[in-house]
Image (cartoon, rainbow, N blue to C red; front, top):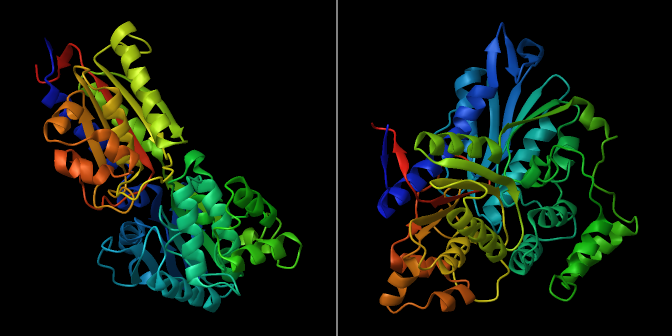
Length: 455
């Protein structure tokens, strides 16, 4: 192999290739095919056998941005054994299906279509009996796509609560705790409705630490959170006067014992419920690492569990990148730093963007004038916030180029308007729906002499 000095364009190309390899490794259809197979009339899921002739009917239900891709794999595997089903996906995240009704609905703010989808899923759950098998497919976005309000609450109540929590920078764990306690289907309640049928849930994780009770707000697993926890979250963000009174009354009634808690681990439904994670963020990071190493980079996975305020996370990443440049710690250039997880954006402006675009804009300001440094931040599902971009890719010249066009990066950042900024600079990362969702991938490349794999 020959030693070459990569150009800035080469670094940008490599970052995109590394990102794509991570996406490919957690493709939802492939993940299901890898985890599931049929041998001797048994469905084996990660080596656990289920005797198919023992079930009178097999139904598929679920929700999430990648659930249609998951369903394609299950239909291919089970074929006419499937008696029917229904899954809810984000608008435009569809795949052709033969045996399963596909409902398109709103994300991240739920809508009436999502409500109808959740009602249809519960109809299937209620009609199943002890001799039936229900397979539930969950991926990122499942919380917003299963919006069935608890009794006495409305969809508009839920919409208002979720939007308020998103705007204040609440974590996904906190948001989902609230979702579970204002829902008739989340927080283990779907499993309770499926009982006494057997329930298998196949999960593509989009939460830090792969916590089953947090993914899609845990509709098929025991819920450790409580109504009292929800009130503490509301109080910690000073939201009592910003959420609907009906929601606050519902939570307070639950905390005082007036509403039954979400089912815990001792609920009988979980005796016939089985949950399997078939893909996660660390899987994507491992694949990205291998690609980066093949391209000649000294590679380090920082963490698959990055959380916190997006701008703070960006500053940490750029600080490490500068350390690599100056001291060759923790790795020497040419270096590839990888991280995953899900940060949050506290909305202070009225612009358009997402956590990955905001990360990239904050990082661009930190690395201005840095030579041979590229940073990519992208959502593995192909959509970042309420935009059509997955994220953005920047380098040490991005700020200067923007200013030459008359753009003020700080103004756009302060207005949370990273999308319109990058739309003008041409640095949006646009992939379209990817067929997966395992949180975000961030790639930091620090140039140096790279071994050319073509030589």
